[in-house]
Image (cartoon, rainbow, N blue to C red; front, side, top):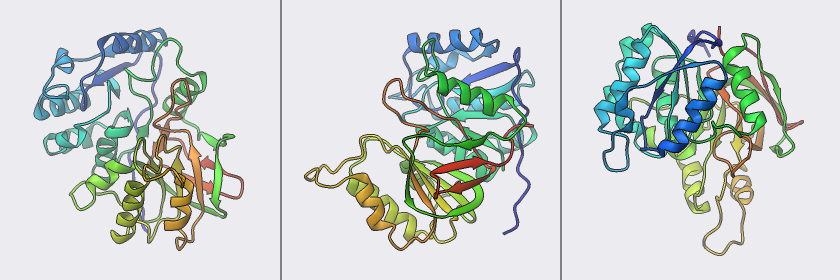
Length: 313
């Protein structure tokens, strides 16, 4: 498969300006202040518009206004990276208002997870940009954030060398084998939401990362069936599942998430690992920033991922 040239943002350096946007839920201002303080302490400048504190329903303002925050941060020459204040709900509602021309002319680091997957998918698939599945400002970024969360965040955003091997004790192999491809994916429910839209994810030749939180196993089963019916697993090279926090069998608690994965994916003959620590987590746990859009190797024989190329230039 011919790979279109993907844009890599410039590496983040101390003294650079990080722009903060709020494309989803409104957020706790005290937690936000802690995140800002931590980033300033790391040597970065911060920039955000007061509109991020607006509220409309559960979201941080009206759809078009939240999208305007993103457009303005991409257009701003002083801003070198864009972090999200909060995830939750509402990011997909901003997609029709994003200015593709501005974004194409100004590739930058864009970081977030969970509901922010809608934006990561847009930037990765529509504008062909490397994006980053990682912490949000009012969530994991604070004075006592997990040491490894901070280490991997800084490594992937500031270093122009490949991240290399990612191997953790909680990683388990569901189906052995090795495969290489471009890393794609994010939150399962958000990936389901964009199927059939202009912002649909392209899984051909990809190593697909999937994670979620708090979903009934029947819902996870439905998601996997939908991925199959939509031909999203037909040309995938391998699958990496996240921790799938609190995804349980509410019908009787007889089965586990791994029962469902083994059952529904029994005919998907590709390497599969489970438990990668990126995205949703329990308090204090690690959240590894994953670069989406770079070439990786999935080694399910040894339950690891190898990031083969730098995510920033």
